[in-house]
Amino acid sequence: MSGMRQAFLILCLVCAGAAHAGGLAQLQHFWRETRALEGAFVQSTVGKEGKKAKNASGRFALARPGRLRLDYEKPFRLLILVDGERFLSWDAELSQLVISPSHARLGTTPAALLTQEALDKHFALAEAGSEAGLDLVEARPKSPEAGFEWVRVALADNLPRRIEVRDRFGQTTTVLLTELRPAARLSAELFRFTPPPGAEVITAGN
Image 1 (cartoon, rainbow, N blue to C red):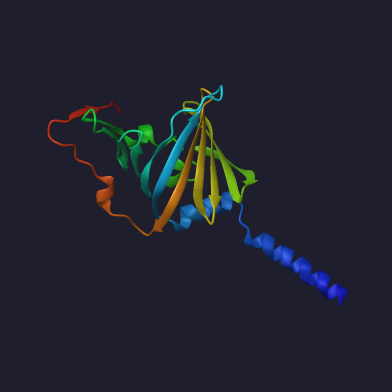
Image 2 (cartoon, rainbow, N blue to C red):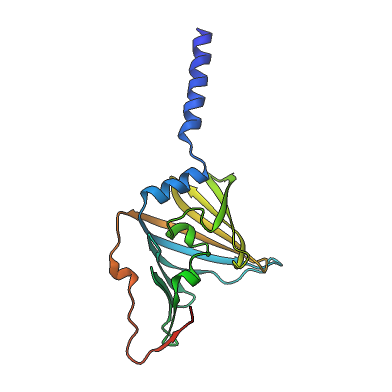
């Protein structure tokens, strides 16, 4: 009987280990199964000397391939929009829209890990352990021109919950994702923006 209990315990441990997916497996599942996602975010930055910048917060929406919308609500209103071809930054207070090609601004950024189609095209990916119920994936850019050293994506239930980015100046930016709502698709209107009459429009080079 003791042998049966021991075998049952081993079987349970094996099943439990199989049921728990690591960070890379969860990220791959997210890429494979979740075509669109929306929710809220809180962003904070800590400098190299430990000095903390003011938090920012707002709403986000993403749809693959290559579409992203960030609506900053606090401490100021700012819209960041990637429509698949262009990167747009709209400052309502200045009534100014800046437009540049999305491949020049998105391809090697941390956001590419969630919006692009090639999981390891621009990054070297590795498991980075787990903490507080979250499994971590660390991504290091393959391009020496990237503006950051690494990005860590923390996942649970096959969804990204936190993104940490260490830039070349030693600053670490943390983005917490909440109120997540996966979707099969999001309205195309979410990823379109037309500036009001009289707005200043600046087009950056390719």
